[in-house]
Image 1: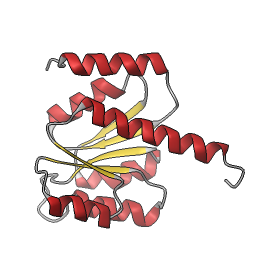
Image 2 (image 1 turned 45 degrees about the horizontal axis):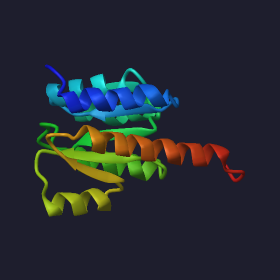
Image 3 (image 1 turned 45 degrees about the vertical axis):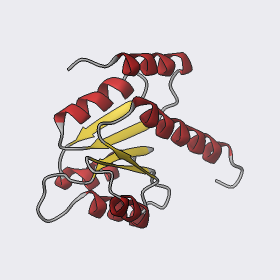
Length: 150
């Protein structure tokens, strides 16, 4: 898979900023999406890739990531990304979850908000939007770490 020139340019912006110690969990059963996020983010952040409903909550608890990119349709007949987001948000009120979907459906966006997601992105993914969510997460983490009321 080759990265589009815009992705390469966005990756250079990350290089200029350095690392912040963020850890990002990517939950998506689509190999192309996994590779895109891995290549864009892993040079500067810790990235864990997960492709199944069964592993998603387990990996979240194991690594306690700062940010989760979570696909809605994970190919499981019983559970989906909304179920995972709800479960994570119930156990971690500070979880930052960005839902991913092949369908930019207003109902999906509303449901993502209801289950505790911080954002929503339609596929194909846009590097600028990905980096926007990463930067917002960095800002929030920095504010929490510098707060005297931790």
